[in-house]
Image 1 (cartoon, rainbow, N blue to C red):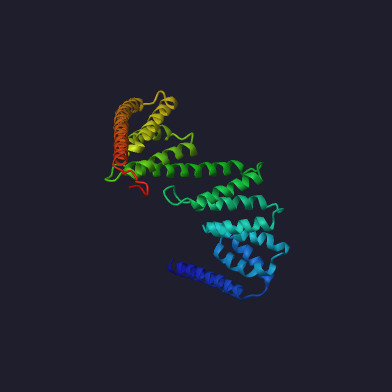
Image 2: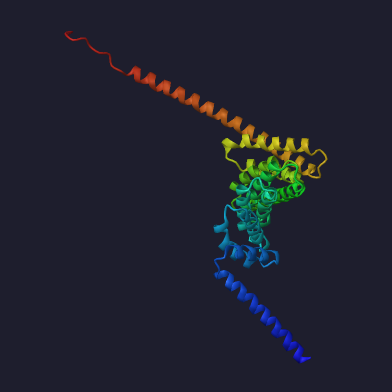
Length: 314
């Protein structure tokens, strides 16, 4: 039994060393046909690192030949299989640009997009690469609208759009939480802008009702804390948001809260307008008083001005 195990281990070692020896020789070889064949063999066996090393040697030599097309296609796929998605995306795109009429061109353009999709981060991270993936998928859909991969491409776009939406929602919620801090002023305005942009960008989102309610809440608080000269304008804006909410969501569970906010804002507006009226009346009185005082001073100056005496009069 022990002898059998030893013999098996020895056989494995011999095979392994033989394989390593063959690959080492190939690395030193300048027989391009042999390298091309070996690279394809390693690719087919799933030994992608070795395949890439040999393709790197042979591709510059065979570029432009009939063999180059398959080699470049496999080269891109080898990187994809090793989860080197950014590199794979680049190589698939290069293949498509070089062999746009190839039977493999459609698959290459799809794999270019799919590689970028696979590299796209979770929703809570920067989405720059996700937007690049969306652009690549859209390019594929526009170029091959009848492709068998069309549905897969649309599924990928929808998934990425959901990530964008989720990130935008979390960002809006972050600004909303910051309004509860010690210095909420700037975050009120950030909320108002974010909530409106979210509704424009994602008109069918399930979060729109919630954010529309919070828009009424935040805009009312922002208006209430505004300086005197901006207050009326912002109170009216908050009331407009309230009216929009009731029109868009007539059966909302937030209606009671919105009605309370609207009534409070109306009361605040009425008080402000009353105060503004008093202030305007006081200003008019002050201006009238000032004008009267200036007129009296001018009249006094004229009354005390001496009359000039003509020259030569005794």
